[in-house]
Picture 1 (cartoon, rainbow, N blue to C red):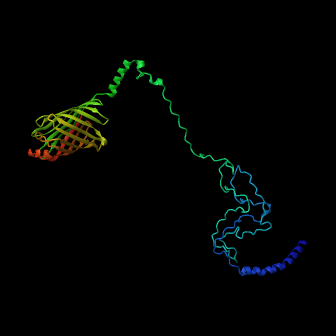
Picture 2 (picture 1 turned 30 degrees about the vertical axis):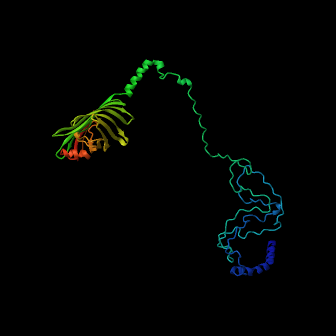
Picture 3 (picture 1 turned 180 degrees about the horizontal axis):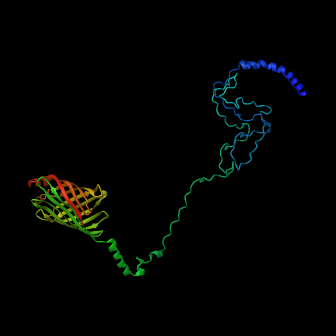
Amino acid sequence: MKPMIFLLAATALSAPALAQSAPATAQADRGVGPPQPADPHAGHETPADPHAGHDMAADHDQGQADPHAGHSMPANPQAQPPTTPPERPDSHAGHEAPADPHAGHDMGADHGEGQTGPHAGHAMPAEPPAQFPASSTARPDPHAGHSMPEGHGAHGPAQADPHAGHVMPAAPAPAPAAPPAEAHSGPVHAADSVFGEARMAAAREALRETHGDVRTSRLLIDRFEARLRDGDDGYLWDAQFWWGGDVDKLWLKTEGEGVFDRGVESAEVQGLWSRAIDPWFDLQVGVRHDFRPAPDRTHLVVGFQGLAPYWFEIDGALFLSHEGEVSARLEAEYDLRLTPRLIAQPQAELELAAQDMPELGVGAGLSTAELGLRLRYEIAPEFAPYVGIAYERAFGDTADYWRAEGEDAGGWSLLLGLRAWF
């Protein structure tokens, strides 16, 4: 019964207040109310409230506010106790700071059905961190908000190692010590002190002969061919034989040509000694004797033979006859391996003379030149038949001598031949 009495009394006391607030509530529901003043900051980008996110109702009489209040500070294992600034009278003491009207609101949403927010539709800047009061003598921590390296105090004197995280090079190894003087005092061949100098000298000579001074030989018939020309078929040979070691060799060379119905027109033999001047070339010195054409000639020969870069085989020589005539010859050829057995061999030959030799039918300068291409098939490495073509041409006075004898100054030949070596 008593609760009912208290409830009735409370209802009677609140009835006048509810009656007075009813018209205002009705006006608010209809959107009618007193006119609102225009926002002086409408259209402007309003700076964020520096106190947003802070509890401004806290008592300021307890001392100066912490400038880092509300911030997540990194861990600091060696942080020093903060220095408390001297207390100053708070200018806001006794005042209740008004709450931020935008705190906790979505700025893009409406602020109520009856009133539109003055900043609605504006992009509000992010709230800056709270500023330290200008009236305080304490300065903010310059490392506030930064992640401090582990083991580094807030204000400690320890400095970070400038080489931390770097792979430092290893210290250079000490230079090897020089061999002792006794190492150079023994015999030139240490085995002589054990087996005797005479026995070891014979053993070293046998080793040199069997491994470094082997005598070998080779006979190469480079060209042995028929040269088919229009009404003037002929033949040609070019062969060489050598015997010796890797450094010194004895060479015999012969070459010549003729016509089937007239016999041999030119023939020569060379005897040469060669000496290796590097792994690729030999220097050759010797003599050459021409049996045809008449009259005979004997020449002193100085030349070279070897393998040039890109595997070109080169053979060159300078000749001085017993009559004082100087001439030269240069040959080059290249083996282009199309298959393991099929090989194309381009070849070129030039002959030059320092003076006219009318009795030999040779003029000064470039006397003759020949270009040829031979395609051989190696039935075995030692035996390879071939076919090919060649073009030979005489120049200058040599061409005149050929015409005077009823021959053409140049022409093509079809080649059928054999290459072999033993």
